[in-house]
Image 1 (cartoon, rainbow, N blue to C red):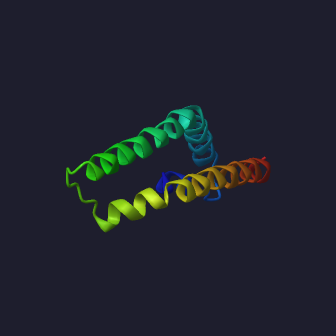
Image 2: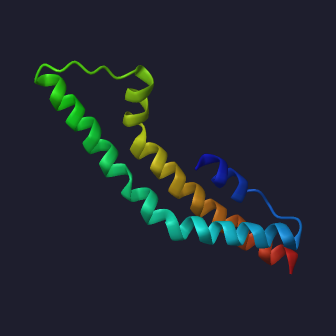
Length: 98
């Protein structure tokens, strides 16, 4: 997700690049609800595993797993902000290339 956002946030200097960025932006926006829908099942899965851990089944998360879970909301907010920034860049590039 981060790579896509960074790619979309680059100023377009050619019409072909602007067209590709617009198409990619529209594609990502159309799938945004699918991406967001994946967040809650991840939380539920971790909660389920941690609940099993309390019942005697030992499951250990790596530090990376714990960090990723803790940063889920922050990363989602960064993604949404990045997409908004990308929209602004695409609009500005469109205006500049006219």
